[in-house]
Structures are given as C-alpha cells and as structure tokens.
Image (tube, rainbow, N blue to C red; front, side):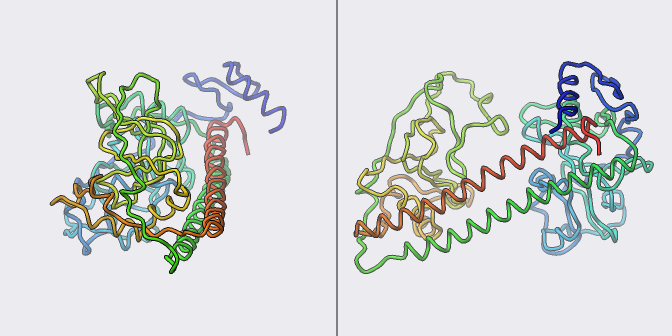
Length: 424
C-alpha cells in the first residue's frame, strides 16, 4: 500500500475529509459518489413461505433462506439448484415469487445481527422457473443504476451492515422487513467504476473459493491415506476403549477461570458471538463441564455428523451435554485421533445409538467405552505413522491459516473499494 493511500486512510479514520472527498451521513466518500436509498433502487416482493419438509424431488427449484446464509460468493445460480429439493406446485398466481436474472434476494431472519445484511445476486440467464422461499424477499431494480456484478457486493460495506443491524428487530432471531429495508442506503460511483470494482472483488472471491477447494482436496487425500495406514495388521493389538479412557465429570461455573468453548465438526472452538446463546442462560450458577488438553471429546447426539475430536485447545469449559474422556498417556494421541475421527470408527460406534427420533439418537458415554480399536504395537511403526499424521495435519492447518488471511484481505479490500478509499 503506497503512502498516499495510507495517508488517506488515516485522514478518514480521524474524520478529516481529504481533497476530492466529501462527507455523507458520517461517511467519507469521493466527491462524485451519490447516496441512493433502497426504496429508490428496488421494488420489493416477498418470498413464498414453504418449509423444507414440504419440498420434494419434483417441481420448481426453490431457494431457502438457509442457503443464503451458507453462500460465500454472494451469488446463486439457477444451475446450482437443478438437483436440489423442489416445490411441487402450480405457478398460476405465484408469479411474483419467481426469481429473475439480476434480482437480489435478502433474508428476513438471522440468528445473529451480522447475518441480517445477507443478500445474494440471482444468476438466472434464461429466467427459468426458480422460486424465492421462506424468510426471503426479492429486490428487483427499478432503474439501471447498479451494475449486474456490483449487486453481489451491495451489502458488504461496513456502513451498510451497520444500518441493517441498527434497523433489525427481534430477540432470539433478528430480521429486517420489506418496509424497513427501504430506509437503507448505499454510496456508489458511476456504472463504469462499479464494473471495475466488481471485477477486482470477483477475482478475490475466486481466490478464496480455490483455496477452499484445495483444502477439501487435501482433506480427501488425508482421509484416504489414513484409512490405508490405519488398516489393522496381523501384529496390531485390539484395545477396549474402557481400558484407555476415563470419563471426566468435573464441573465449574463460568467465572472467567476457564474459557467457554463449543464442540464442533472442526473440533473445539472458542465460543464466538455469532452463535453464542449465553444470553439465554438465566442462572449465573450454571455449571459447565471441564475439559483438558488431549481429552477425547464428542457430542453424543451429533456423533453421526462427525462431532468428535481430541482437545487441542487446552483447559476449557463447555456444555454438560458433551462427553469428555481422559486418555491414557501411554497411547499415541495423534494415532488415536486419526482412528476415532475416521468414518469407519464412527460407523461402528454408532451401533450403540439410542433414541426414536433421528435428531435425538445418541451414544451414551457408558456405551462409547464398549467400543474397540486396533492399535500398532511396534514402536518404530507408531513413530512413523504418527509422523505422517502430524505432517498432513500441519499442512492442512497452514492452508487453513492462509485461507483465513485471504478472507480477511478480501474483507479489507471490499471496505476500501466499496467506500472509494481506494479507486480503480
């Protein structure tokens, strides 16, 4: 970043207006930028409130609000939905719910304030039958003031997100209505500059997407490699889990001594603001389960989804519904982790599941330790396998760190370009 841009950023941080810029509603933007309110840009239409359980394999492609929250590139194409669940209905009288090429779909429900500004551009070149669904509403341009690709980034700028969060209503679920959203504005340059900005940001999206694909390929390779390496050999011994695991049943209140964490499909993660439910806890004396470094942890009800890991985070507290085991220190922790997180092990241990409903089927701790694993006995073999496991895991961690940096860089680039701090 050159000195001129650094100087401009510092001036804007201090709310000093640089030459060639102006102040609009507390935001410093280029002099040729205009303020455009959504009510002057869009006609808004509601989505069709059909829950997922009423979808089938026949009918019209159906965009659910959950798909918007999971989307990372701010664009959804009709082709993506050709094999997704559909809504079997006649379209007479429902034409207003059909998505056209270039429409913007907004969500009207989010579990966190950050998600209230979620929106996507609809790519539907042939205007195929494609319905906007539950907890969504459609924005269709009234006039040609916003370029096609630039629409992907309408709600990405920080000052736009703040407007959504300020206008959002709700307690457990937040949302912005079709009427409320009309009050939101964007600041933008002419159509030619919009196209230039969009081109750069689309390139950044592709870089992030490619990095994610690369990580997934690495994980697939790791899975195949581990499966081959950990296939039991003649001299491997069978170990009963009850002989190497001891359930930890220590509890502690949340007073800051231990970090509050969550157990996810990616392992133990610090409890973030996005899905933090602490505000629902009314009792300050609630006790959480303690877990320590190198414990084996799993979620009894979500074992089917792969929520099992070795605690690499450290001393922490988490929900009492989770199970945490102290592991015999004689066992190589890296090999054990590779075994217990493998699909073959999860499939075998799930035979102990109890529960009538799929969502509530769980493996109790006393049943979990009835499981058995095969483990190498030769010290050199243990060392070699552990070394390869570590190399693969470290490589993936490095690539994930790179991905996090790319995501942060993309976010910073969005703010710099969408506010005109950097001009193309």
